[in-house]
Length: 105
Image (cartoon, rainbow, N blue to C red; front, side, top):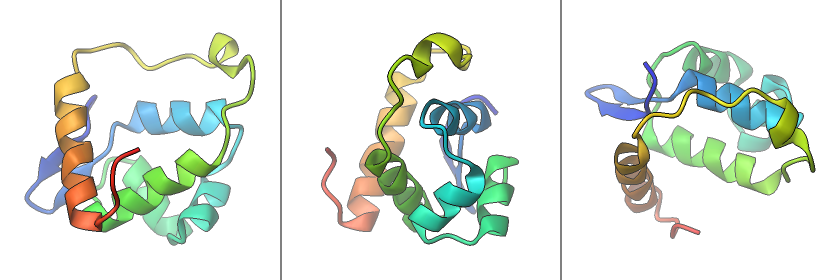
């Protein structure tokens, strides 16, 4: 699946985007799991296409926002293919904000 989306059992993340975001910050899944206070196995399952709760998604996005993007990483890390996902991603982020009680930045 190329886009993040809400499903009956939770949110399925864009696997390539998650890979891209960790690569441009030069952090491993293990480090992201630690920063997000999420079990490594849980993060691995999410990265492999399993759905997660909105609360877990909020933890992951909050953790990613604390790690700066490395200068120049965008020029050497292969970006996921562009699709018109802005609307669906925005809707998911709004839902996460409401569910987690965290205002969007």
